[in-house]
Amino acid sequence: MEKLKTIPLRPDLWALDEVGKTIMYVINGRDKALLLDTGFGLTDLKKVVHELCGEKEIIVVNSHGHMDHDSGNNQFSWVYMGRYDEPEAHRPLDEAEKKRIKDTFFEKYLAEGGSLEGWNPGPAQAVLPLSENDVIDLGDYRLKVIETPGHSLGSIALFEERKGWLFTGDSMLTWEVWGQLENSAALSVYGDSMRKLAAIQDRVRTVFPAHWVPDRMPEGRVFPPFELPPDVLTVYAEGIEDTLNGKLEWKDYPFAMGGAEPKMMKCTCF
Image (cartoon, rainbow, N blue to C red; front, side, top):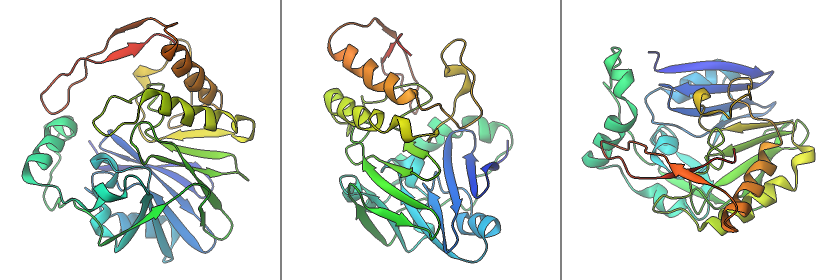
């Protein structure tokens, strides 16, 4: 298995698929380049971005503060992150956490001959908080910050309105809602965030999530890799609202995390 796959999606836009477990995005602006998330930090991300975009300044933004999205932050002097996840972004990973990452995410990669030599995940020297309506200006691309607490308290989405690109981080996980984690917001708050995104659906052309698992797609729906249609925003908003109102059926959905298999529930509405 390749450590990192670079997939062109649009002119100036690429997905970076790290060991098939997490997705980062690169946008090549006229003046600056954007790297959205730093994944597990297995790869020299500066080198990758410069090869795609040339020797220009790299702006790094974390969609949220989970270790499969910010473990490469220490490759950069500073990064941006949503203000409510920013405090967690300064915490170094101890050996127990590194083992959990290895056991949870790298099993297939290592079984196929992958190496963790030189892997040194950790925080950036400085983390700059982002808030609602802040703008990341790349010169010709301008990405507005939308705060979307739910999956984590500090989750953010980035919206490039001219292109209709919406990057949602883990707020959307290939048609799944993950709001059961330790620092997730209440489901009602998650629903408020999804209604906020659904309100701009008519201006969105493509939703780009931070994970891609094709076999979790709803039956009969097929999409280009790493892309979801705008109507997913309404599906999420209405699905969560119906869940809170007790209108939907749920089923067991076990998911292994570092050897453990906590009981989760999956909604049949997606």
